[in-house]
Amino acid sequence: MIRPVEVTPAPGRRERKKLETWRKIRHVALNLILERGYSTVSLEDIARAADVSRATLFNYFPSKEAMLFAPDPEEQQRWQSFLDARPKGEHPWITLEAFFLDYTAGYETKLRLQKQLQAEVAALRQGNQDVSERLSTFLTDWLGPRLHAQGRDPHDAALLSALAFTVMGVVFARWQADEPFSVFQDLLRTTFRRAGQGLTSTL
Image (cartoon, rainbow, N blue to C red):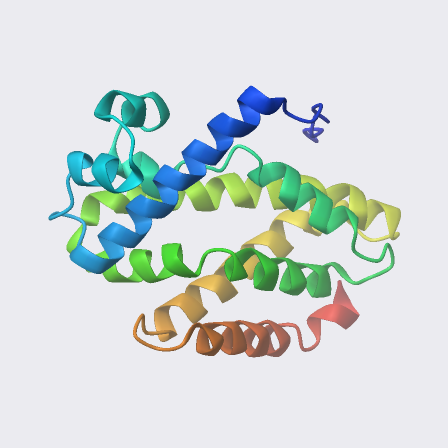
């Protein structure tokens, strides 16, 4: 069943201020952990660097894990807007390539951190899995109607989403956190196009 994305009114001043604080804490936390390591950064360190009280920090994030994996409150709206703006007749695989290039461009620090932590903090793998499942579900739900509108089989939505995540996994495994992020993006672009050879003519 397709889950429609609710169109919410523009946030007021108070809501915008809360969102700015949420993003500030998240930004500070990611950079501190990337610089010093996950286990050596405390919640007090993050609160101090973000210039908020510990109580305020807990109002936004219950744990360090949440700072890494909790979705931005406007994240799904951005996904929806980006995909809806793509050409209606564009092959879905091309759309997915564009989406993941745009999506990862906004998460350089987070991706570097996940690469750094994948061996250090095994307990965080569940958080990564939750993020992937949330995005996969969204993409599958979006792809179904788009495939149908193009006269394609909407049941291929899950297959296309799964293939796109396989590409992401291959690229993430090859890329090293000390390499320029442009290397990641080039690998992502190239691997999407290699995986899409033949796919765009059969689906």
